[in-house]
Image (cartoon, rainbow, N blue to C red):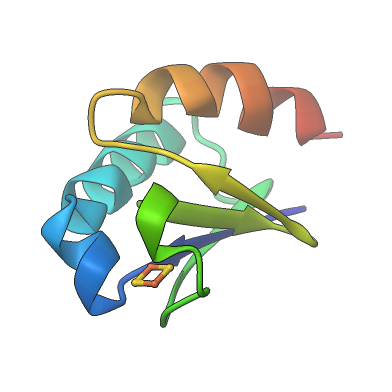
Length: 81
Ligand code: FES
């Protein structure tokens, strides 16, 4: 199970965290990954400069609405076991 935590703090919200969440949601639906990926919204991760912040485990990634799909394909999918 991959825990995908998306920041919905004010800075990340302004940078499009809602759209990032929408994109992840659609991909989880389309690939039927409900049992493999758990997405949660989280408040500020203190990486506002590089938001939208997405945390998996201890690692914080910088994602944007434009890169959400490629991030999912290249980073999230390989973590699914
Ligand atoms: S608002 Fe997202 S890291 Fe601060």
